[in-house]
Image (cartoon, rainbow, N blue to C red):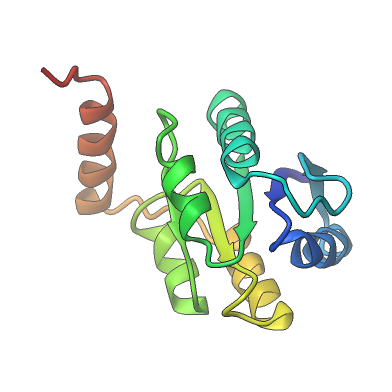
Length: 151
């Protein structure tokens, strides 16, 4: 059973709760990293960083949710080793995994309904990274860049 960490701010809280239960029924071990209760004044930055750091450290996958999905994708991609993808449809979910080896799925609670977000999540979590040379090369270039210092 694959472990997946999940987190959401107040705008994504309801969707997180829905996905958590549905994905558990699909044999995923879901670890909820917050918020555990609705908090109107929470901050997506703290939640996004916590999930991204866990994903990078444990080499697992994660799901982050906010209203647009944009804020979570921005903050998650600040963490070394993270390739977070804001995904709006099923094809993007598959490509994010197969071509880019995305390890965090960012979802929009405001623009995509629960059922579509569930299908996107299942496709993302059930897709594998391609071993094609061009995709391996691109991910290697990203990892190499992460090791460089900006001067």
